[in-house]
Image (cartoon, rainbow, N blue to C red; front, side, top):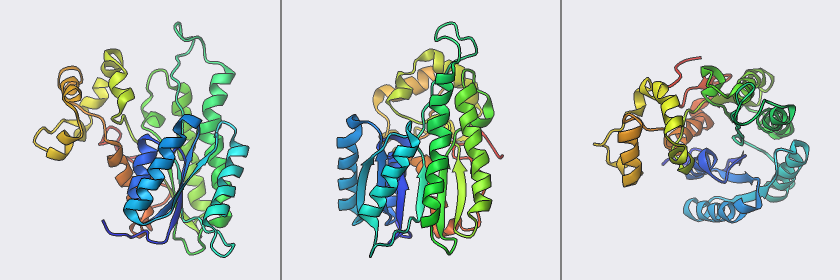
Length: 295
């Protein structure tokens, strides 16, 4: 892979697992040094091991910083301080790339019989992490962006912002808000960076395969209309990433339709971060296999 981000420095929130980890791997392979944010102490060893692995494999610098985005002011201070401490050159910090990836979800219907009604606490938890935290972090990063429009900000949204999934009044709303802020920031930061969002659909992971038949049934109609989701058993790369039980479940319980690999979402993010992304800003790029087309 060409090292088109050689010498760049990026911050990835929620960089310890899932899509965030895949984005970190993609950017590192392109030569970008990284500060990976994680939240819980249980993620520390994995994040530090990931950093060591990326540094060794790609000759970059990678550091981990613990910061709980449910307390966004404290978290933003911790992230910026870590960036200054570990990545300042001659006392000068430049942040070339910001990936606002961290997020939480907690489905709950209106007057939910099983989980209880939506409460202000449930609302505030998701809006604090999914909306306020990226807003405050982007605001804090802005003075450190390049001054030649080479900066890149990518926000991880979701198809939930526009498809109206049952139980996602709050989560879908947070992602719609993030997309709205993306467009505003694209104008406000135009002299320093492009600002875009990606909106993944379901992604492969342990949680997806443990979700159960009721969940798979709920989204089957969406998956059936996702052009790229059809399992291609002739593709050795696809099949090598799935174990025998996962293949069985996809074929027997999911109508032969698979979710995305996290690396497939990360490829879109990585592209937006390269010089080739210069003329794309204020956009929500559909990194979901066609589950949601256009904006």
